[in-house]
Length: 117
Image (cartoon, rainbow, N blue to C red; front, side, top):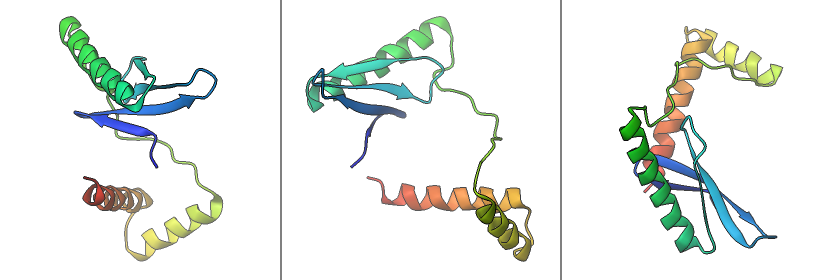
C-alpha cells in the first residue's frame, strides 16, 4: 500500500483523518504548501489534480519555478557499520565513497522505475 498519488510530474502525500473522516494531503517537491482533501478516494484524486493545475497556473502567472530546485548535494546519516561497509566496498571497487553512493542511488532508481506502471 502506498500513501502517494501522482499526476503529471507531481507527487501528493495522502493521509486519512479518522476523526474527521476525510482524506487529505499536500503536493510534495514544491517550495509552497499546497493541500487538498476529499471525503472519498475519487474526490481526493480530483482535488489533487485540481490543486496541481491551479498551482501550475499560479506559478506561470507570477513567473515562478514550479518545482523545488536541488543543488545536487545532501547529507546522508547512516549507522557507523553501514558507513564502514560502504567505504570498504567503494575502496575495493576503486571508487570514492561519493561515486559509490551515487551509483547505488542510480541503480535503486532504475530498478524502482522499471517496476512502476
